[in-house]
Image 1: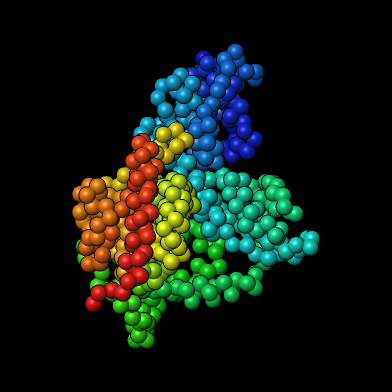
Image 2: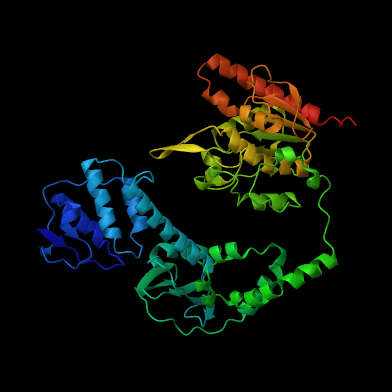
Length: 480
């Protein structure tokens, strides 16, 4: 005996969750429920209206995953989610993980929904309408792949809270009036008026277009052509591409600015092998922007963001840690977590002002192992450190510090190529791969992990001592 559940594909009222709870409370296995609503030849009718005797508990991990999957357009989503819910209830593995075949399907659907939300945030183009109140009024049309109007609207409500707006899609319309979002039915594309600001935006877009760096495959991947018809600037792209070769020639004839001295002579020992050599950044800011899209190793896949260095771009002392931690990964800034707080306290005691330093890490992405809600730190391996030497080499080339302080074994290896233990090296000056001086010291996280309080106190004192000495040495004139 099987049961049929008739649910709309765009389930905005939580109908699937209610139906799934009732089905599970009656102990109905996945193969007895037809979530397509067709019922089939052997269907005995709809799902029971009342909950069954079994109490249902759902994990937060599954609820989060279901929330991200439910906007997907594929009708199989209901069956797949119920299979996962059934297995969680029966404790048959964890069907929310990528390592599980079912979890992989669900995670891919969630990823597709998330990508669609990102495209909506990036490609919605508002046109101004006559005001309906004392606030400016705008409208836009967007054609998403999935039912994402509701989850995507919170972004617009926060970013454009000072104006009224409407975003129409084929399935649903979001309307923001006086600080509140409401939803109504979708429909055909509304007749939106031309906007005078579009001409200004098109002029700006044409002027920032760099024909020398155009990568057609990457552009089509990030901005698929199906979105072009609703974006005013895309009408310029065919002509700009047609003129790209001639424009590059004109740029060469006009002459290019010379890169900062030293940038082109970065030691090849800082270049890990790549399928295609990247364009060499000409400034520290360009290096930072390029690092945000780094794909030199696999750490970029799980980390939240690239954590590049920061501080004084003319610093005489550069401090290099090992890798970002959990808080650095979330905030996108170096040394803001517990180890960073210890470092900054030690700096204050040593009389070192962070604003006068360049602070960075040997590896720019957070490496971790998930454990429930926690992300446990893992040490980067040799290949990951070597891959990231490209970025560290650029920082050294542009900042040109008088002295570099390597905190921890990973930083010492990245800078010197020597991965020997630190105990005998701490406080010593070595020659780095960039031919500059490198002082070795403890990493603050090693002090925090030290179980012996007396040893931890000694290491902390040595870190403070090394910071003070490094500052003193960095302030000395370089030996010619």
